[in-house]
Amino acid sequence: MRRLAPLILCTLSSLAWGEACVIHSQAERLDVKVCQQNRSIPPNLFRSGFCQPQLKGQKVEVAFVEQCPPGAFGVCRSARVGGTPYQQDIHYYGVASDANYLRPACEQQSQGVWMAR
Image (cartoon, rainbow, N blue to C red; front, side, top):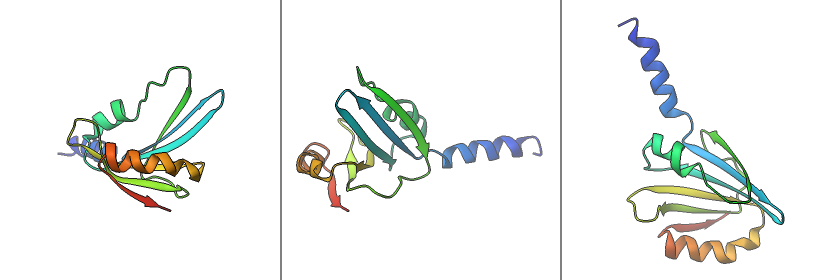
């Protein structure tokens, strides 16, 4: 059991760490920052797929955090991920007027609940 204890602790800590990811993408006239807070996506799938966007022509930085940072102008709570039973909360940072098109997308496409901050 002594030999397994460090392995168990490493496994448990990896499950607790990285349940959210901050994605910052930049292009010529584009600067977007969102944070995806995991609700029901399997942890490995969340880290390897949902938090690894492939955005052609954009510089993308991803940072894994325990929870999304404060300062979002809006959050799409319980957003469904297209064609799956998985849910996440998507926090939006930057230009608050973007809520004009993000809110309808949240409510209609993602079947989420929009929360203005």
